Amino acid sequence: MYADDTPADPTAKPKGVPVYKRILDLFEAEGIKTLFGIPDPNFVHLFLEAERRGWTVVSPHHEAAAGFMAEAATRITGKPALAIGTLGPGMANMMPAIQCCKVENSPVIFMGGQRARITERRVRRGRIQFVRQEPMIEDSVKYSASIEYADQTDEIIREAIRVSMSGTPGPSYIEYPHHTVLEELDVPEALPPHRYRLTMQGADGDRVAEAVEMIAKAKNPVILAGHGVYTSKSGAAVKDLALKIGAPVIQTSGGTAFIKGIEDRTFPYGFSEVSIDAVVESDLCIALGTELGEPSH
Image 1 (cartoon, helix red, strand yellow):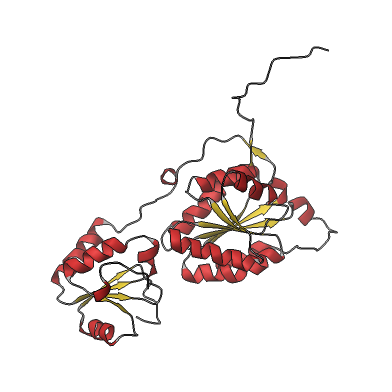
Image 2: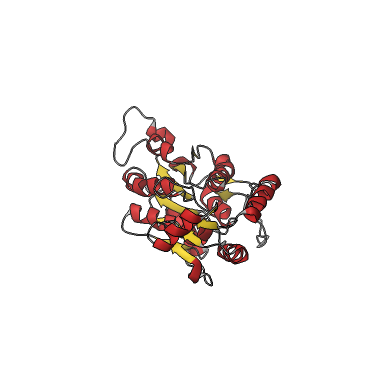
C-alpha cells in the first residue's frame, strides 16, 4: 500500500467549524466575551472553548443567579449578554431572570440545552430533565427559536441579537438541541454588527427638528432621565443639554446613575420637594431613556 509521507500543511484551515465554535464567533463579533451559566452536556464544549479563547466564564451555584448577572451586565455595558441554562430544570430556574429582563427591557440572549430531537420524539423515553421549553419561554421574550439544523446557526443567533437590540430592547431565547452540538459548518468569517443590523437607531430628521423647536420655545424645561441614559452611555450629552438650556435633571427610579458635573441640578423624581416644584412649574418635559411608565408619570 502506498504511504504518503508528505507533511501536513500547518497553515491549512480545518474543513468545518463546529456549531459551538461558530456560536462563540458570532458573539465575539458583537464584542461579547463573557458568558453566565452552568454547563451541561450540550454546552460543555462551548464552555471549554470559551475559556480557551480567554472569555470570562461565570458559573454560579444556581441558574437564576446566572440570568440576573447577565441582566446586570447589559446595564453596565449597554451590549447584549449571554446566559446559558441546562435543559429542563436549568431553564425553569432561569424563568425569574427572563421575566425580569422582559419588564426591564434588558437584551439578554438566553440559550437553553435540549435533547436531540430523535430522542425527544420517541414514544418511550426517559423523563429526566425533559420539558418542552419553548412554550414555557416564548411569551416572555421578544424572539424565540431553535437551532434545528446546523446551517441555521448564523441566522438564528443574528436574529436574536437583532431583535433584542432593535427598538425597545429585550430578551431572546435560543434552544440548542443536542444533535446539532458537534455538527460542522463551512462558513466565512463572522460579520461585524453593522453588516447585518442597525447599530445606530435614532429619530428621523423631522422629529428632531420638531423637538429642537419645542425646546427653544420652552421657558421652564425639565429633563426626565431614565435608565437608558446610562446604558447608552449618554451622560455627557445629557449634561451638555442640561447646561445649555438651564434645565434641572429629574431622575426616574431606574435612572439614578451619576452624571458628573451636574449634581447641583439633579434630583430624584417624587422624593424631593425641589423636583416636585420643578415638574409643576415646567412647561416642557424632555424624556430621555425612559418608557414614561405609570408609577411616576
